[in-house]
Length: 383
Image: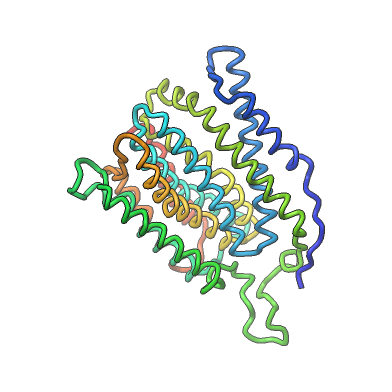
């Protein structure tokens, strides 16, 4: 039986969230100009605090996830990341400017490519270098991939082919249908993952053995994994509160630093879509760190739950939220991808299907995904 004990929270994890909120209060509304000495110092302070808040968010999310167990724990970080993403997109879209109408599309597509190629490839690489061959559940992974493919097609591909409105946009009725369909698919997936077929998403070493005197034994589980003490309820509630504080700080600090990011993108002559890539890279940092840690411990199923779950949440929750917010936002909401992006999306889906179909992966699959991710980043900067 898993013991529940009082696990002390590290001092730095307690200190970072309120410190980040104080830095946010100090810098909110200030111009962080890189050319001014004071502005450069302030921008550096915001950047360091932002990274620290992200690291603290990872720690507290893992504490809460350990308390509730798999696969419920992986949902916590996915939803938290989506809250950050939606907050950033709405803030930047409400500010207007060039490219604001396509910011949601650029960010969601970037999140899809980063997760399915960058995060998955990095997890496969770290896991394969340490454990040579990695195992995972085909049932749960293919279910997540099928849902993700349907969501991506509804949200990012079909708007480029509809004829009710000019350009790669949805009409009001079409956008409402896409939002409801996305929310429904994500809700059904969460129900299957956490209730109906929860065992499909458990790590391979946590599958119950079919024979033996104790049916609760787990195949291949290491002693430190199966008997690791869970944090107590008080510790989990503290971490949950500090996690919420971290999320507020991350959204606010990223909003504060966003003009500097946009200025840097414009200064190097990169396309406006690179801003969406930067936002996606930032908000996915906590989930990436947690997924890579799990892969290093030979828990690839947990890594895939985190990675594909974050992509599902990114589309399944972001699109409905943006659809509702578009009622108050001015200007069109551009969702349809261009031909180049559609090719990359189709290539990613096909390669990911071939990766997960055998239920095993090696360093070769890692290299394929990372090369596609490199191509995505290169073409985003030099289209």
